[in-house]
Image (cartoon, rainbow, N blue to C red):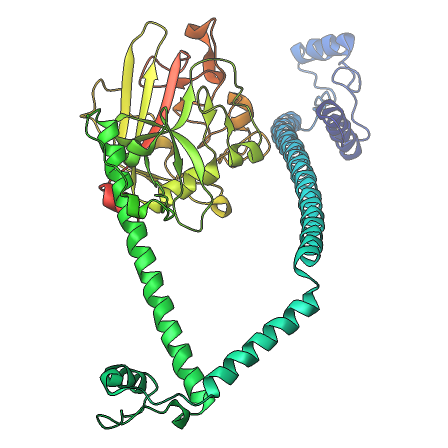
Amino acid sequence: MATPPFRLLLALFCVNYMVLAQNPTQAPVGAGVAAPDSHNHWRSHTRGNFRHYGTPAPAPVTAPPQHNEIKELMTNLHDRVGILATLDEDQRHRLEVIDKKVDQLLDSNTGRMESLKAQQLNFGQRLDSFEHIQRLTRHTLDELKGETDKYLGSRVARQLSQKQKNRDKLRDLSRQVRATPEEQSYVATNMANLFGNQPAATGSPFNASQLDVSSRLDALATFLVSLAYNVRETQLNVGKIVQNTNNIKRRLANRNKPQSAQLPTAFAPAAAVEEHATSCLQSYLAVNGILKLQLTPESESFYVPCEDDGWTVIMNRSSDDISFERSWLEYKEGFGNLAGDFFIGLDKLHALTSSALHELRIWLQDFDGNVAIAGYDSFAISGERELYALSLLGNYQAQVQPPAGDSLSYHAGAKFSTFDNDNDNCLECSCAQRHKAGGWFNACGTSNLMGVYHAQGHEQAGETGIYWDTFQGKDYSLRRVKMLIRPVAGQDEARR
């Protein structure tokens, strides 16, 4: 591609060539036209004075008027060259932007490949561990079978013995029953009702041989099934009673009252049914502020820190011990220490906000000890397929004191972004790389709670710091930050 100066020289050369082609014999002014002879001019003038007229002097030769046309042509050519230069600069800028985006895509794909490799390696290690456990289990079962055969005899012998016992029982059932006394007619009546026959007349003996073996076995099976059902129902009732008793005991212990509910001795051998907490509204089950949550009986349990009034802490920042410039996989699983700085993980946060309607609180503190709080009446994020988008963010609660201002509504609907997974709606930048954090960026934004912790120079930390625009501004990096959620409905709704 030719450069603009070369194009300009080429255009000028073409113009000169065109001018020379149109006027090949034209000479410069003053060179091609001879000046009139001064002597002949004087003689002619003298003759005129004596009324003698000679031959008139020839008219001066003038060049064709082409100067204005050439000037106009040069002006148009100059304008076109300028337009071409501007278009060349625009195309060069677009190519630079495209090259930058290609580099970002390559970096993002490299990060994703590394995450997938790490996940594949982790999966392979788990698979090896499962296979090792399976081999140990088989070896243990073989040892137990060997010990059982050693003490109880071979399995074939035991099976034959059991079959023989079953035959003896069937033989006993098929024998004739002796006539019962008259005073035992009530028992005979019940036996007859059990086996589906009418009892004999009073004083008549009950003869069990009137029934065949299959009918008696069917009746016995029906009776055993009914008995097992009743036993199961009784066990469930006992488990509920024990669970309620344990709940009462924990509540009394949590309120520091001297009374304590004791388990009845009759229920001591029964296995207690463990209560599964679904939110920090059941904080009486927490131990040292840490609660084990299980949202559904089939889901996997996990631990969360709880605060007063049923708030669940999903993120805490108080020092520079933990870096929040993490990959997509790390934000998905969660990282940090629940007793210090941590992030709960996008999968767990999606599960929590999907189980019940939650509200959001953001607690902020600067280095002078000033505290501010921002509250939103609803909050939820989508799953990984939707890139964990901030799908629900309710109204800002201005009544929460002291107010921090609304610096999150601008991010509503944005997808989550990390340095290796850019979803920030910014074509010419990567907000996660610019802010050195993960978050719900919308062509960047008005807050950065997961930014770099600046213990020094926090007043001029800039866009990489932990900031909340409506509290101390974008350049000020905060000292402490917490994100908390709580079910909007009551405790019964939170347990569903």
